[in-house]
Length: 324
Image 1 (cartoon, rainbow, N blue to C red):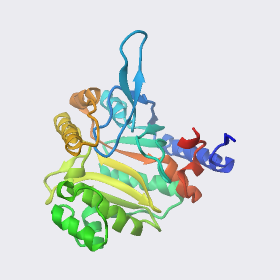
Image 2: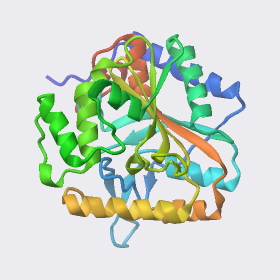
Image 3: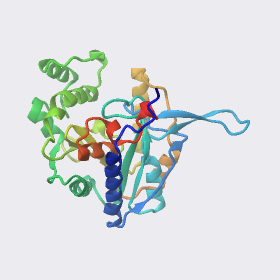
Image 4: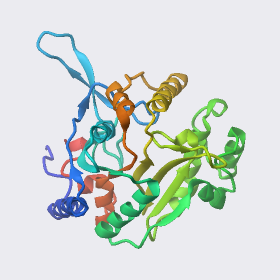
């Protein structure tokens, strides 16, 4: 017998709609423009840990071409910023390959917004206001990436060697599934974080984790004047969920191209992902001039899960992947 019914209850879907409406009011009250950008693009992210879902497009008798469902509206929204849109937000679907489980669905709903003239601390302030509005939380705790690792593991994530991180994992009885001799320090840091730190934080109030190692800068500015240099990036955690990822946005197209090209080298080195085309439209927009800004992406499904105290993501969406 086919189960055609929604995976969420009607009351959960009603609460989800109310939260999305609250979000729109939050940004309307701040005079931030809502925008809409394509879900299909000729390029996708190069991040070695985020995989886009390809699609085949065929126009009449022309050869087939591969396009991509977007993992985030980031590149397109930054093109709008470079064109002079001012501060903007978007609520849209996003897609990621292989993400399926209790808190993952390959198709999910994302809130992303950019604030002209903000740095990552300004955006953390606004993000905190949003969480207090939607979830009625206490003001968030804030801690640097380094201080969190030093507190729970006694290691400096900016200077620790691969062997020191491998030893730290062994001391905490963590099995390393990948080849230790070729493991990137960032892979080991992520492993230590998910096993030893994430379960112990952000239960009573959200936690803003900021100032990441420069190897994890992604699209964030790097503050080379600090010792050690750090990436102006933050992540948000609450009740066992990573909710959001934000940057004081990099504006230099040359540096961004280098990071993309390095991502492709990492993909090739690890032999885990196919090459993907760089988003030349996005890089051209950076070259034309991205205004000083900060941006953040927040998972709405996880936000609703917290609001409803739900255990699985399928409890807060009409139809999950298995029932789509």
